[in-house]
Amino acid sequence: MEALHENKIKLLEEIANRIRETIIETLVEAGSGHSAGSLGMADIFTAFYFHILKHDPKNPNWENRDRLILSNGHICPVRYVAMAYAGYFSLEELKTLRKLNSRLQGHPYRAALPGVETTSGPLGSGLGQAVGMALAAQLDKKNYRIYCLMSDGEQDEGNTWESVMFAGKNKLNNLTAFIDRNNIQIDGFTEDVMPLEPLKDKYESFGWHVLEIDGHNFEQIVDAVNVAKTIYEKPTVIIAHTIPGKGVSFMEKDYLWHGKPPTKEEAEIALKELRTLGGKIQSEHQ
Amino acid sequence: MLNKEEKLNPKLFDEDVEQVPIRNGYGEGLLVAGEQDPNVVVLCADLSESTRSEAFAKKYPERFIEMGVAEQNMATIAAGLGISGKVAFMSSYAVFSPGRNWEQIRTTISYNNSNVKIAGHHAGISVGPDGATHQAIEDIATMRVMANMKVFVPCDAIEAKKATIAAANIYGPVYLRFAREKTPVVTTEGTPFTPGKAEIFWQSKKPQVAIIACGPLVYNALLAARDLEKDGIGAMVVNNHTIKPMDEKRITEVAKKCGAVVTVEEHQVVGGMGGAVAEILAKKCPTPMEFIGMQNVFGESGVPKELIEKYGMGVKDIKAAVKKVLKRVK
Image (cartoon, rainbow over all chains, first blue to last red; front, side, top):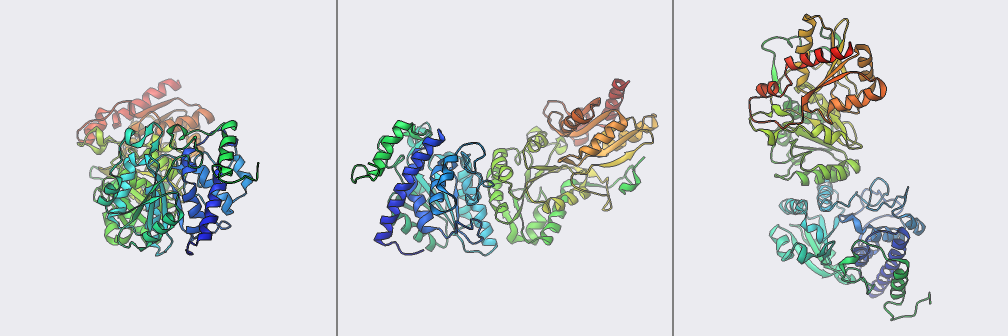
């Protein structure tokens, strides 16, 4: 991975902002979908597709690519948009999200869209699949890395912890997990619905190396991934503190935006805010 | 009489017919598959002796993955392996896998079209004294209903070995169903086994009824056919080992030829092999049918033979079902 210079950080911030704008436009067009988590993870997806991953958008099945597994498939709008900007397919295709005959299913479908790595949506089953891929890489003596992005809500699932336990036992050092710690799930705040804390201690006690970062800070995201690569005796989990709905003030930290798209009117307000970076700059659209 | 072309066990009807647990065939099949293909890996949820995964674990320790008692995790990890170039066999009791992990199998294996083979052991009530909690009698239904999934139910240990090797050579999800108890060896190494092709094991000169069976009860079906012949009732016995994709052509042919059908399986009659036969015949050749199997009840503890009798899957029950269905033909 190249070093993260100041100019690169600036570029990543610009891409992330553009991705947020396109997420809003895509969700309005789709008429349904998950806003909060998609916006909250825009920085991490940007960091992956534009800095961290060894990948080839023109050859999505390249054997030695890093694997990026999205376990909480419902935030796939951010993945689709990031993939489109990275060159996997055209931005135009984003308009087909959630529509008939689309490759962009409401939850990601591996057979439809090369590059999504796996089918996901039902929570708690992404980490296990990532573990299987990590085992396959070790059996084949391949040194690509496996990244698995999870939500905090899906830490409620027993299957998640079965996979956590297995990866700890087997010291899967080619596996790095991220938890999108945005503190919301469908029914409310995670600590009200089903408390997860102390989450760091839980993972440590299962044999993982744990890092905590600000999920909107590119330097911290990239540094944490680099640290994970140096941990040889354990898998690493990066608990990324994010703001759900990040960038759109009326969506931020409100769990009611977990599973719905903005209306046209709401989207206009959101886009204005994103295009002016919250009023800090003049938008070219004005 | 027995169909000579099938090269069945010549001592099939002897009192001391050789009996071998069907699951042994899985263990032997894994060794062959593992030798044929270095990408074969075996996962097991803390039941390696009981599911006969043990021999593979000893021969190929680096390709054996101990899961602990975690069937949901086993399914998802197998899915990840199966989409990364591996041929992943996952082994447990059918009640737990594909029972407990049904959704993981649906999404991450079947919908994903991952190259995973699900081996469900201790299927049917012949599990015996462990009781109903450990007797899977719904697994054919829950697996055959999934798109992409293939379902094999071998009738003895030799066929189980062939089915295991065949599954390794098919890309995509396959469900293999195995019984626990010692089961009479019906077939030989020379008996044909082709996925998707039902075999006629018994053929009377003038068959009036087709007894379509799968799993260990194929043996009871053959005993019933032999008795019926003595009573002057001709029959065909079909070993219907592939529940999905079922051999529509042969099922339709035998129904047409005989005019009556009795299905025999150690499974709920709703949604099982018999149900699948009925789906075919309703479309292609509506035929009077009777269904031998579990009649909307759970099993219980007991000796396997006693259980088979109590729950209406014995030889006399098959004969009675034949006589019942024949009345409807007239």
